[in-house]
Length: 436
Image (cartoon, rainbow, N blue to C red; front, top):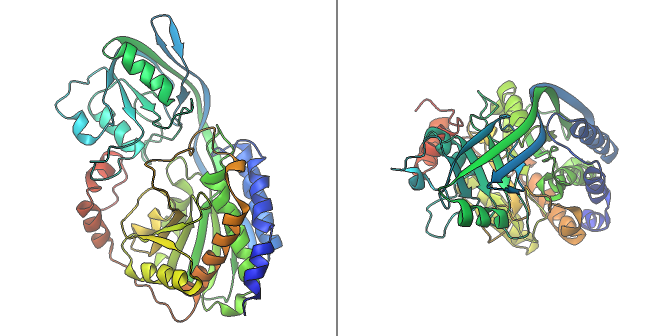
């Protein structure tokens, strides 16, 4: 009965796929590299034993970076454009808003300024404030430009998209700068005029989602998901090559355990996650969400040895994760709060039980994520194999007959978001789907 554990601890199926993904080069949404990664993943799922492996294409707003610049006096400081920034050049006074919390924007005259904010939050903050929320607070305040300053040392300018589903290209030009460049900016030029320039090619493009399945041909199904795209400045090893490689590994594990599945298991590697959850949103809009028993979304796994399962308020998901942790004597961190920032979210907002599975990390923010330092050698094969065992068991737990996870009404999701203080920020970023 436990032979499958040994198979996972000697398997190189997923790890080899991870190497293949990071060696492609850019996997930016809408790029040739993203499509190559999707084809590689489809083929790997088929070779792992999954059925009906295929690509499903959809149109997106394409964006390809050009040069960007921050000029002050005679200095030209290194920056990188944030994806979906408009191509513009502005000259305006620089205003340092520190962490860029919502209250930092209040009672400030920011009209026509260039705002700089940090990528982290202070210990006293009640909640995490996402990059896009900080950006749209700046837009709402009338700022002319936005500078996103990494809090992680190492001369690493961060990336991350702006724009909304309704208006994919942002309102004002936006760049990321390293912690060191940000410190120099605010020390030397706070209150002085600087020039911010973004060059970008804005065009139509196509992305694609990968799908395959295992188990009985039931209407009800469990989704095991990841995103195949990555930002164009790095290998995207942790975010999210590891998650997609884990989907392939789980397909191989479950192909050998199909008799343990009472519900169909569908493996989905979404495209265009990094530019607004586009692939997963398209999927959720077109499918019968009532037929989805649960979503296990893998985004950020393998970063540390302890899995973190954000359960988005579904008590039965917490119970399933705790049952697996107890069974194998291996810790799994369970986080009960809602998290609207990965591919589980288009399902959760519709009341579908969904995990965001990542790795436990005490630090604030993304660490090396969304920088050029998100590279393969920082991940460990041992951790990959350990987590593959736990995640295989978790899928079987949810796709077996002994576990039922009830859906929730979308209104209850909206209420919980408001209680967590997330509603106002989601409205500002255009991510609030509810009528309330």
